[in-house]
Amino acid sequence: MDALKRALVIHTDSIFKRHNMKSIGYWSPEDTPDSQNLFIYILEHPTGRKRRKLGCFPSRSGMAEGEGRSEANGPLVDHNRPLLHGRTSFSALQ
Image 1 (cartoon, rainbow, N blue to C red):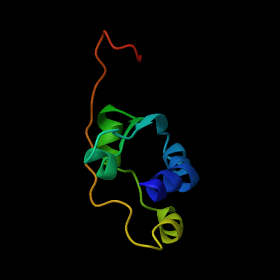
Image 2 (cartoon, rainbow, N blue to C red):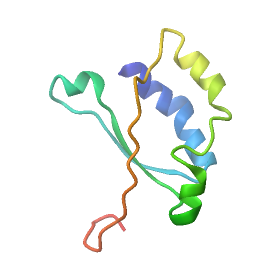
Image 3 (cartoon, rainbow, N blue to C red):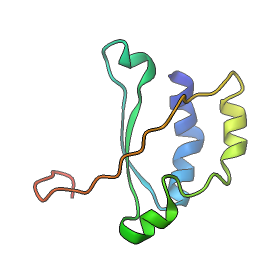
């Protein structure tokens, strides 16, 4: 989990920014077993037709170098479960 967090700070956040994605927040559960294998983050990014055209993650270009360094001891992520959400009118985040 520590290696994943370091990779996000060093590599991934800059990749998100290049694709007009803004980091809103990152969370780690405090209770086991989820604290050992679950990491949650929220990104703000293009929506609608443009978002669908980009796909789940717009491009893997530029990630290989960062992954090579951060995954030297094995993969950091088992799987990714992206969810696309729309804001509600009563959300504190607008």
